[in-house]
Image 1: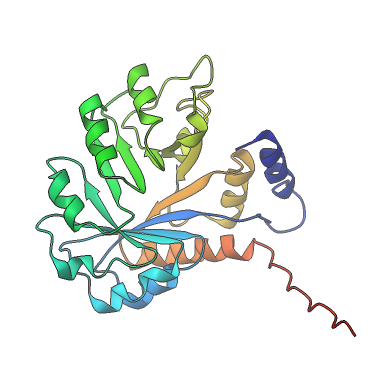
Image 2: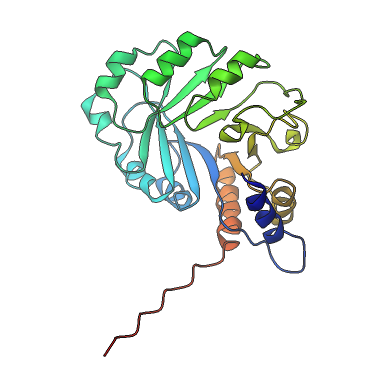
Length: 264
């Protein structure tokens, strides 16, 4: 994000007597396909990206019908690839696959547009080529430890990259090249320490019960950050729904355009 954009966020989020005001928001919500369809539908709204863990490739119709109302929905799928499973991916609903042991050529013959690829371990040239061969919409990479400099150089070539490290990353003496294109996903408590000074955009893991004052403090400290939360049960889902409600209520409505006067 540019310095001007960061300054705008800081002004919008400056503490004061008024409620939280945001220019927009994005929150990533991980849920399981078994969640009650109405609860799932309440979460599928603008500003929300859903990540649906699955037990099979074919969603219940009640769940599938509700997914397209958010910014996007990514549905976990695995082989064998069937035409019935492919048909459910339309518009903003995309498949989400693991790179490990994936038959790239076979998957490409089946896949609809907009695949998200899950990548784990060392990012080698071979893995990079396999992932790029899938023409992904986005990539989620979970390195085993601290990535080597050559891995970061490869990572910068991946589209829509989220990096979710298993350890707190060391600080950088200088910004990494093209780091602003990468979303570093870390617990909110590690946002100040993990990869400090590297220049990554942030995706902060928060708990479903995060309060409105805690949310405001977090976004003031990290303007432009996206949020990530997991809803494991109905209680979590209710908390996430409340959190989304606070975020949505903090975005001023877009003024309606007035009709142009009729020329006579």
